[in-house]
Image 1 (cartoon, rainbow, N blue to C red):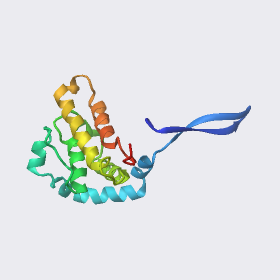
Image 2: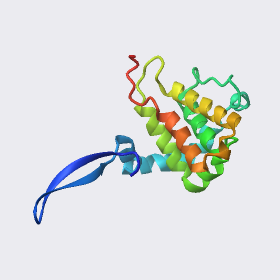
Image 3: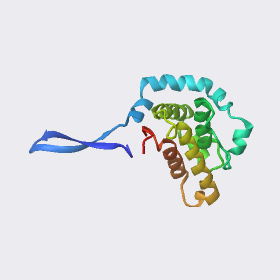
Image 4: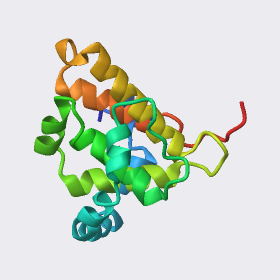
Length: 171
């Protein structure tokens, strides 16, 4: 898998010890592919529309501006906002995401990602979605669709969403 850590495992081959590279899956990768995640997928399919409907017209109107603020919103609204930016925002990557990533998997990923953020005053999931929205806005303003593929744009946005996972809040 791209972006995963790699560990060395030694084994014995015909001529003695042999070293091979074995990809290590991150906790997030393991969680998304687990049976527990499949159950979450099913639950989210049922209420995904309800979560998405939590996004107010005012919040959606602020999406393309510097007025977008999620600090006082419940975590479900933050997850729905992160999902909306990836799947329904103004960027061309939205159709790529809807075509190539099952919606339930994306909801599951974002929900698990949110759970990996520590509860601290700044480096939390609200900040992560704020960074995702800021990157989204700058991508639109600078016309990154001219030089980023849709997959690259999605990768940048998903990286922005996860950039502070596990941050202790102490700089």
